[in-house]
Length: 344
Image (cartoon, rainbow, N blue to C red):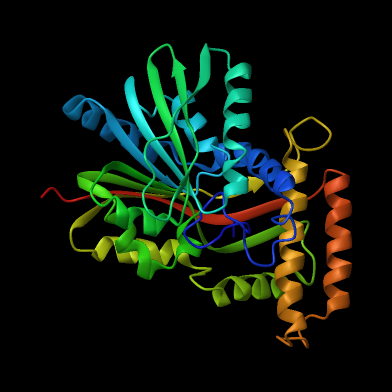
């Protein structure tokens, strides 16, 4: 599982029992650190479908309207520009996250990204548009490259509530690492944000696999309790990828266009000591999340015969040493899903 997500918050939300989520700066660092892990995982074929559909929509309507749930610090915005998924021209990008501390990192991240980018880019502030009821909107950020102008509008709000307030307004809906914490009973309400013919894209949807290598005798017990913790949270689902696939295939009023694997694989860099970028921090965050989640199940008396608190502590000590020495490999099974709502 992503281990850091909040219902209707997605990639930027904070989870119950997440040790780092209480530290806003550390959590924003985690969101940045996992960018490279996500980059490797995302299925390029489905991104190609998204690119084509957004280009067609922009050609038809002129200005494009994108709604992202769980924006966090804005890594998806940067990725869609860098990978030329957003078409040339103007895009209005509504960046919703229920965690205002995560959204506070949006401007600093995008400015740092623009400074580091090989091709020219600038990020300037523009006044936010009028606030809808129950929403907290900061000043918009205008991201300009040689071919694209993207107006990023941060909104601290529940994604489903925002969708209800702005039904039918968006050409594209993006929810990364979202459906395993959203609650699939809220999915139809979320899709209401799309205009007829609009596109939904749900990448990095957890689907029931958490693995650490080298293998340890307590791995399966820890995985089972970790997934149980997810399943017991409101809206949580450790098999969300498969469940969402079935639901979207059968849904009235929309059509599933593609599905593909997007497994996370974090491992030491080839031919180098340690991990790429800041991925050691990413792994330490995952271990902190496992500690909090599994520890909570054990404290509540769940399956204490299978795994004790002392067993968990010993496992964590070994895994943290393996991160420090550049030995730990972490894998999760996830799905990317893309589709469209039907024309009116």
